[in-house]
Image (cartoon, rainbow, N blue to C red; front, side):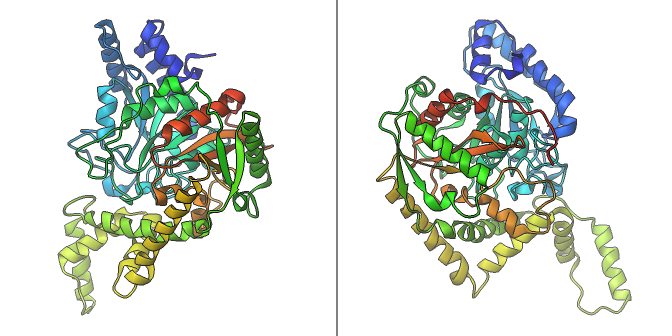
Length: 508
């Protein structure tokens, strides 16, 4: 087994023992990126010299006696988290030249832990999308089949891990954007409880839904990264003052006794791909063989989750993205071109002429935002407008509360919920370009956790006949990440889906 095929936990042990240096490990991943990423397109930017400099610094710290589980381990970061003096674009022309003057809390914690910041990964523009096809920068392909999507919006982060170009990566999850690409790329993704990980320095999409979390090859690797980035932050007013157990990693080897897993029959019914259904049901049977009890439940308001999400999230996006006006933040249209445009309109006899400032605002946003971002801004602006606020946004907030109550009642009966991550395996690139509603339905099984603020874990549970990964989702009550991670480890210890490697083949 090559060095880059080792788990992050094992790599951490090798670094601690001195059997491998951080420079050797980092160079191995840089070599993989150089040989594979031209086909996958997971990274927007990689600076090999900077990464190796960080690796050398980590090696020097170890020689001085410093210890940390992440010290010297490479980590890829989704291009939505601010990194001081480094381009942070959200895969948008609007922020194509943005260099933050500060680190996000997550990046600062990674630095403090001695991680090597390997590079910035591709994403759907401003995290708005489920396929990473809405990036203004480049296309990312699924490492298992390069004609298919890696999912989104954290598609680059998931693809980097799946293709052995990073042992760990940071993603964000607003409606499934960690779990869905993790499921489609055959890796592990954790969406933490809302507030577990600081959002300070995370460029906002929908502030009441966004959460930062880890992607990794196996569950213990995800736990390793999660423990490093979780914790209270005074810079984030929504941050929870709740600490994780110090023995989180050690506790993963202890199976959960008397585990009660709830499932919703409708989530395995009509509309779910037969191979996905079969793989998830087989995983449920595996859990039963490990001593778990299956309990059939109802989440009566889950059928409204997608509609509720696609009112609330665009409303918050409309508000958050209003700041990008070409004056305070973001791309600015050429004032000279604006004045020339207005002069031409006057010469043609136009009467209703914008001021230079208004036209500059309009042109800046028109030029720099992509089609999907514009669509969501318009949806949100409409739902927040006079006469529609009560009918759409306020009603969606009420349904959101009912969805949370459904989960609360469910967790009175079971420890965790189990089901599919997505209704189907990875879609062909471009197959949903003309059907945004179909793309939104890709989030059918994931948006509920965001609306309720609960943690959820995605892990591989099988493959289709054509070799595409299938994801299993576990959801838990607030702050139940330790239980989720233990349950995920139980499953992975009894199966081998996580040991398979992407070959980059093309399926029919």
